[in-house]
Length: 427
Ligand code: AMP
Ligand code: GLY
Image 1 (cartoon, helix red, strand yellow):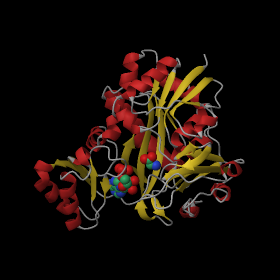
Image 2: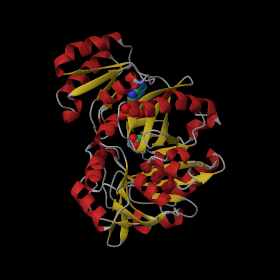
Image 3: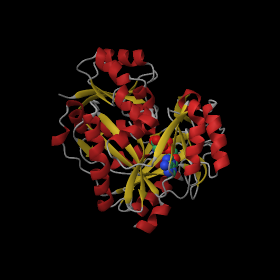
Image 4: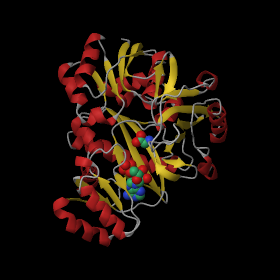
């Protein structure tokens, strides 16, 4: 039966997921809540917040929705899946309940999960204000740099990596004094892992899984990974240093025990798991779990899935994922994010954007932070557009992405000019 699908969220990730679902032959009708000007071309946008559970439930009821795909982590951690399932027993929801979402919502929970199930990760201990003396003693036993993580959700900002002991002590004191609010009332301190990061994505029904194309994210604002951390300035898939041998280790040592661990702990989980990994000399270690897809990785990953994503999602929701076959294109994808000048610091929004149409020839331009103002698309966030091109090989894809990016303009717009460059040495 064709499905009526509702995608929750408003960014580039949700635009990319909606774009992929919109091509499914199993789709009857597609809605996004709230969506963005990009999704309005392929779906019906519903004006509400994805954090407003009652509004989401109303949208499900009014539109006879069969499946909800939850994009961002906040509603998942706040329990939207349990909320919707208790109200609409037949509804398919892609995204874990509150218990499974603790893999992202609590660093301590995630670390304990990994240690319980023998999943390779950095050595760690967790502390509260009452054990600050022990925390400092533990820091003393580690080699610099030091990794301090606020336990709870801190909008991607809760990790600090001071490179000397005094800074680590000061940071710890600040975290316990509420630097990240309630999120840092507990702090995980862990061993620093040296290596290169890769994002691995899994779709699971709680027992079976599909490993989606992996991707690399570019977190710093400046070329050559300099400057402040951002939500992500670009992505590349496939990742040349994550070859067959490395990915086989990821599957055996990390994906299988993660899925088995969820089942063993009695956690029902139907949705995506985004595993942030460090490749340390050819061996994978988990840096973090996220209970959703990555942004901007999704904008690359979706263009490389050639089988029907909606069919896979339905199978995940129904527990039939074992019989699904994922097909992946061997074309490479490169995504370049165009941001507002000043981001991730202070920036001004509301500038009209030109060139989206021109840039979109054979290239996907996903909206991340835009809105309509007097019928025109204007910037409305730090990260504004994600431009994804595909090509035979990473270099061709990157050249095509940058050609498209050059056509886009708004007051103060900025993008990194070196997305994928660092990976050329692995080709
Ligand atoms: P997270 O919010 O857990 O993704 O951490 C943010 C960033 O901090 C990661 O993407 C890594 O670049 C870095 N990071 C986190 N944990 C470690 C670690 N144990 N060793 C080295 N880098 C880390
Ligand atoms: N790109 C990293 C994230 O979505 O958390």
